[in-house]
Amino acid sequence: MSLERTLSIIKPDGVRKKLVGEVIRRFEKEGIHIAALKKIRMDRAQAEGFYTVHKERPFFGELVKFMISGPVVVMILEGENVISRNREIMGATDPAKAAPGTLRKLYADSIQNNIVHGSDAPATAKFEVSYFFKDSEIF
Ligand code: ATP
Ligand code: MG
Image 1 (tube, rainbow, N blue to C red):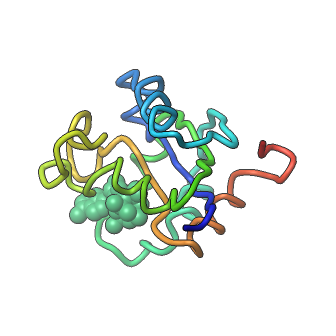
Image 2 (cartoon, rainbow, N blue to C red):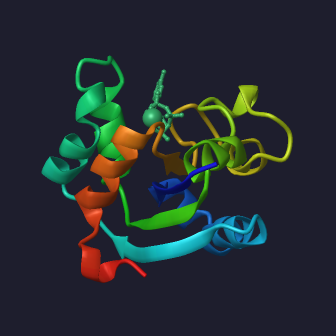
């Protein structure tokens, strides 16, 4: 067991569909601590920098366009093994392949418009947490 932090984003489609409350409720119900939270609208440079690992992928341009299409809610989740637990709660990238009861199965429309983001490993979590939050914003 290890106490971890991970970055969660409620993507523009999740905000548009009024799922902010549902997503936060789910994390809290699972015993996950919300250590930081804010609503922002990313600009293009910020979204490109965030998704830099995907810059060679064919969907990169569309993904950036989608992520800047409206405000998002960024959060730091904290808890035991929260990086993989959050990925389980979210479900597979493609909602059609996501397990029953996962956020993406319940609420997502497509492989791109999949309502939430979650860091996928300790190194990416560290990068992504510090991409959006200063230490003084984390509780
Ligand atoms: P996230 O990083 O958002 O938590 P993920 O780790 O499940 O999702 P990645 O492979 O990292 O998926 O892809 C990042 C995001 O890019 C996906 O969440 C989705 O919004 C978009 N994406 C991934 N694959 C495709 C695709 N084939 N077509 C369109 N968009 C895609
Ligand atoms: Mg990913």
